[in-house]
Length: 214
Image (cartoon, rainbow, N blue to C red; front, side, top):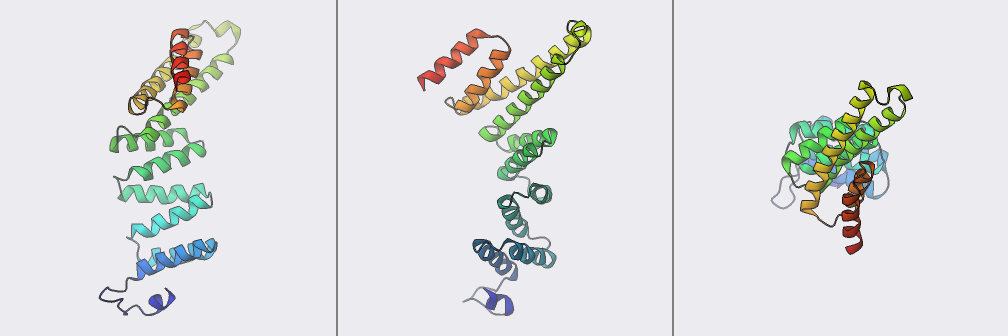
């Protein structure tokens, strides 16, 4: 590989010697050897030489994910998805990383974009359902922190309304997921928790039956 890099005019059979591919291959070999810093340096150089080659950024993304460098991974993902708008896997990874970084709204937007590409994406549907569950939990906490005198006030009722709205949206997306995979236990358990919070025992019993029958 180094020989190919040092001899850019050399042909491999009848194929042109493509330096961008050679540099990406070199980084892959370095990664396999555990030499992550050197691999990153190679890709940084490659990116300067070939700024429009998305494969270089994809290889950088793999390294950042492997090293759990979420900030760098997100920067690469934002760049990639501005140019590649049809790869659902990029938006799913973006949604997951933003969720890990506690940036819920950006995670939601990434999952929504993924759904626009594939409306039956299980990961995207679950990600958005979880977003609304977390949103409702924040409202529950807010309601719990209200003074006793405000619990039944207009303010308290407003918070309860938001709790139910978020729960209903979570249910909507989880139900869409179950249409794709009726046996998904994570989704069934998530719905069970929601209906327990809503004190809908009939739905809880229905889900328990499904879980047991699995």
